[in-house]
Length: 404
Image 1 (cartoon, rainbow, N blue to C red):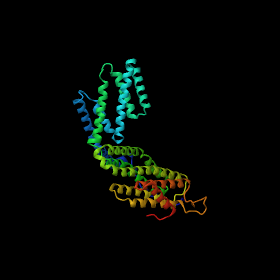
Image 2: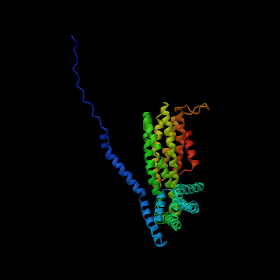
Image 3: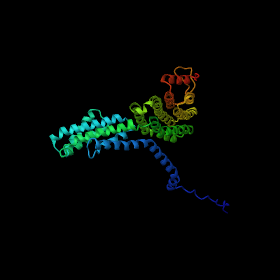
Image 4: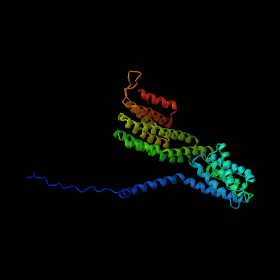
């Protein structure tokens, strides 16, 4: 007789799988909010440049039309807008490159076209020679582009339009001077505000990534650590834009009379931002080494994630202190406490001079500890300390001495 069988259990219905469309629809409001915030940030950053571009284009056209008797001064406003658009870099240098490029294109075109005539290969030869001269002069992108473009114009239009060379050069000069006048004299950018807005999309994700990195290390989640490392690496374009913004701000306070009074404060602000930028590069190295430590199954004591978390908090504290021009004592305390935590994670000092530590970290962890101290040094310098004082504080912390 067959054994008594248990009644079949009632099975729960299979869980409803969330489709890709449902996930996309659920995340749509947050993506919309992020997109609106990003566009609002771009308007705040570039709002003044938009005004500068309109004023510079109008001024360049007015001067070319009224004072140079040019019925269609197209190049003047075009050049003026280009100079304003270059304001996140060295505007004066790019203006000079543009004008030198025009001169080179004119010189090469006027010299060679009477010898070669007009044609496809002649145009190519003139452009190549103009760009070669620009390269030999160690010109940048604006000089190369303008030299080649001017050579093309002269090669194709100069014979039927005999008076084109002078108006083109004059138009470019008028446009360049108009762009400079608007950007440096009439409506100069606010240097600190511009740099602060450029720093936002760099420092905010960096701080969030460091907090996430600390949490991932506590869980020994290698995939999450890799995501944090990838986020830190993706800050490269933002760091480049921030670097150009610092150059533009320094140019403005040097050349714009309306911003001369900001020279002292911008010098302090520039020192802080540049050293924070250097510290972020170091944080990326720390994250890369700790990711390698996890892959190699090295021990990572709990003090190390705590130090990274505290360091991220110190960056935010330092930002607030710099913005309010307050003394960043709290940020310095957090930085040095983080250094002390990393020292504890490294291990106690050993009696054997050939093994200075009873290591709690592996090979990659020890390298990460050294790079962490470099990051701490850079942040201390960003807080307003000189390099020697920062080195002394880090060393005293590692040695176990008291610091104020």
